[in-house]
Each structure stands twice: as C-alpha cells, then as structure tokens.
Image 1 (cartoon, helix red, strand yellow):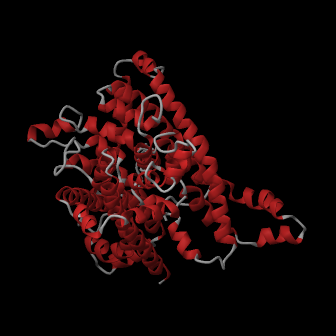
Image 2: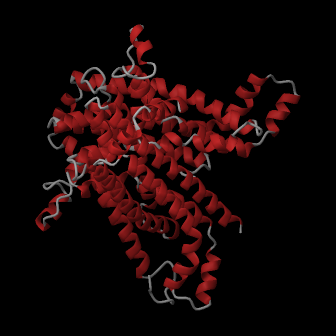
Length: 279
Length: 250
C-alpha cells in the first residue's frame, strides 16, 4: 500500500497486486472448489453421470426437494407479503421495530437449533406429540416436519425484500386509488403488487434457493431415510458418507446448476431493483 | 411458526433442573465444542473481514477483465447448498485433493481437522463482508482521499486515517453477520470434519448427535446456549447497523 505518491490511481503495481490477492483468495475458497464439483462429476464421462441420475433413491430425493420448494415458497410468499404490508402500512402497529428485527431471526438461528425446536414441539415427547400420536398424525421424521423446517429457515426472504420497496413507495398511489373508489383487494392487485413485483420476485428466488438447498434443519427433523425422507442435499451427504462419491457428485452437480441459475436470475433482477443483499 | 417453537424450547430447557442444566452446558465435551465453534468462527470472521474488505475495494475501485462475473460470483455461497460446499471442500482439501495435496507434504492436514472446519466456515460466510462494505465504498467520495493526498498524506496514511474509519462500521457488521452464520453452520462443516469429540466437533453437530441418541435434554441445553448467543449477536448486529447509519448522516 505504501507505493509512491506519484503513481496515478489506475496504473502502478499496487492495484495489480491487490487484484491478484483478491482473485487468489476467491480461487482458493470459491472457484477451485466450485470447479471441482463439475470436474469430479464428469471425470468418468457422461454415461455414469446419467446412470446415477436415474437411480430410484436419487429420483425420489429430487422429487422430495421439488415438493418442499413447491409448498414452502407459496406459504412464505403469502406470509412475507402480509408481514410486509402490515409493517409498512400501519405505522402504529404495536412493537413494529421489535418485529422488524425479529423477522430476521431464522437467519441468525443455527439450522440445527431450528430443527431441534420442531422436534421438541411436534416430536413424540413434545408439546403436541401426545395429541398428534392419538390422532395418528406423523410429523417428525416424515414429510410434514421437513416442510416446517424448510419454511422456517426460508421465512424472512420475501418480507425482507418487499419491505424496503413498500417503504420507498409511500402511500400516494394507494391513496389515489382509494379516493377513486377502488376496493382494498383491487388496490392490492392493481397498484401494490405490480409496484413490488421485482422485489417480490427477488425474494421468491432466494426463498426457493434456500428451500431447495437447506440441509441442517431438514436433516434434524427428517430421519434421513433413503427413498423416504431424503431430500437432495441429504442425499449428497449420505452418499458421500457411504463412499458412493460418484452418486454424491452427480447430485451435487444438479444442486450446483440450481445455484448457477439462481445467480444468473438474481443478477438480472438486481438490475431492475435497487435492493442490496445485506443491509 | 416462529415464537411457539422458541418458547417450546425454552420451556423444555426449564424442565431441566438448574444444576443439571449447568452440568450439561459446561461438560468437557460441550466446552470443547464451544471452543472449536467459536474460536474457529472468530478466526474465519476476521480473515473474511480482511479479505472481504480487500475484495470490495478491488471491485469498487479498479477495472479489470471479468470484473462483473467475479462480482456476481461472490454470491455463490448464498446460492450453493451447504452440503455441496462441504462435499467439494472435503475433496479439494483432502490429502489427495487439488489444494490439500500441496499442504500434505508440509504435514498439514486440512480435511477432517479443525482447519477444514475453518475453510468451510470461510466459504459460507465469504459474501457478508464484501456485500456490506461494497455499497459504503461506492458512496464514498474520492474527493476526500484526493484532499488527503494533496495535503501530503502517504497512501498508507490515506487508507488508515481517511478511508478506513467510515468503512469500519460496515466491516464490523459484515464480520458479525459472517460470525453468526459460521457459528450456526452445520451442512458444510459436518461433511468436512471428522466430528471427533475434543478435536473438531462443533456445537451444532453435538446437538445433532445428542438428538440421534434421543438425549433431548442434552440437545436442548446446548441448543439454548447457541440460541442465546444468536440472539445476542442479532442485537449486536442491529446496533452496529444503527451505528453505521448514524455515521452516514454526519
């Protein structure tokens, strides 16, 4: 950093060294491991890769992951929109500031602790366990708990992305619509929703990525039974632990592609919104 | 969805007698798990604080080929499922892996040790500092720096006295966010670690193992300890962000 003062900002050695360090660091931690997923999955050619993808346990895991996202994304969208609406349109909402900060809680709680809470609540010795047992409803170590865990960890995304947009938007357009005689749901569908659509889509995208990729919380509540309660990330870990590295990498490629698609869409959406990831 | 599970856990924890709670919370295996979790998370948070700031700086201030792709790629850890991250890191940093084999002759094992846990935590908490520092750096006026230069400050002085102070709240926020994420991380660390008690067993894995043994009280006690720490971190992050915004308005 202590290069000569005469150097112009763009030329000189210092920028090159700094760029070099940045890229080297990213390569060590990020690029080489990311590239390894693809290289490892295809190093025996495309044939074994494809045959891994047609095995029943893999197909079931992929299907389950899809189902988890199909349930938790809509649920969290409705919740996120309601929460955002309630928090930005009622300024005298009791405990508003408190709830605004508490909404991020699922991000700061360890996924394992989130899963543990669900087990304690719905498990056999849990609060609702007795009642559920009597009515023969199985939640923990079955699909319902996996949905609960997934929905829990991906809960804040939509609300987080929509709240700043709604706040910036203000009330003017909605009030105008209201004085022109629009009903509440008309205002919502025709004025509010179109205005927040990019923020909402951004939130949806992040919710989906998290829902499909969640490991910790789901692994605690699912029981991890191959072909039954195993989502794709659990399949990756299980296959690896059982020395079926190739199967693990084939599934990892699918999840890696999901991440890639998410990033590309995210980049496109970011150009349309001004929201930043972490704020 | 959010409050009832938390309350359920605290009530479960209350049913454990205080002496026993204390005994489980401070048992040697738990203490060593906290040590591995928090020391490693802290070290990785600091490393990411330094390199994250550097990456943000490079991305904002310099022009170079593939800059846009590199910028976008910083978010990979947010999008990549942690199980995939753990899987590939375990391979790359193993004794025979691309990077691990460079360290093996020096007698440094990375996968299945504490260092491996650190590498996994570094990867998953990488974006936080970059993404908190980047917007602040973008808004910073370069006139101030030029003024410092023209008044005869060296580049080092300019950086240390003019650039760093307003960035500091953002860096700290990013470090705290990364630390919180690393403390709770499970997916990638469970795969790259050998999960041996007193060696590289982290607190979330300990909870998981207690649950597998149907030791609900044990799992709950450690869970409450972790949850309490997450809550403290959440408050700290909120305060840091408020501090950062106050700096803005001046």
